[in-house]
Image 1 (cartoon, rainbow, N blue to C red):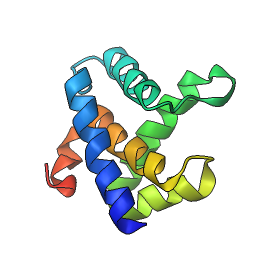
Image 2 (cartoon, rainbow, N blue to C red; image 1 turned 45 degrees about the vertical axis):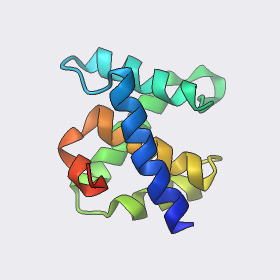
Image 3 (cartoon, one colour; image 1 turned 120 degrees about the vertical axis):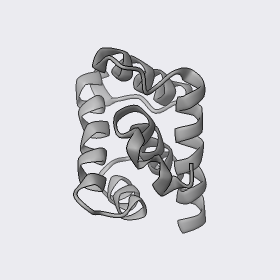
Image 4 (spheres, one colour; image 1 turned 90 degrees about the horizontal axis):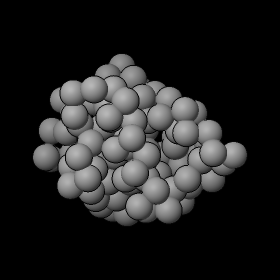
Length: 108
């Protein structure tokens, strides 16, 4: 599971980079983040895109508070219907979109 999540973290961040996440404006970050997740088939229940972007920002808050990237990915896996792979992808995309200063934690 750890290898799967780690690979997905990197894939999520890399895909977000290719799709333009990490631009200067918050709204642009939200749109890019949602597009990256949609490209992976990750969509919010009930079209709650605000909730989805809030979760992405919460991921960064947890990492910036000192939690490891892997522990945050495991938490996402435990509290959402996402698979372990999609949880890692979600966290990687979150980092790229909302806290790119944490990319070195992914080896990027």
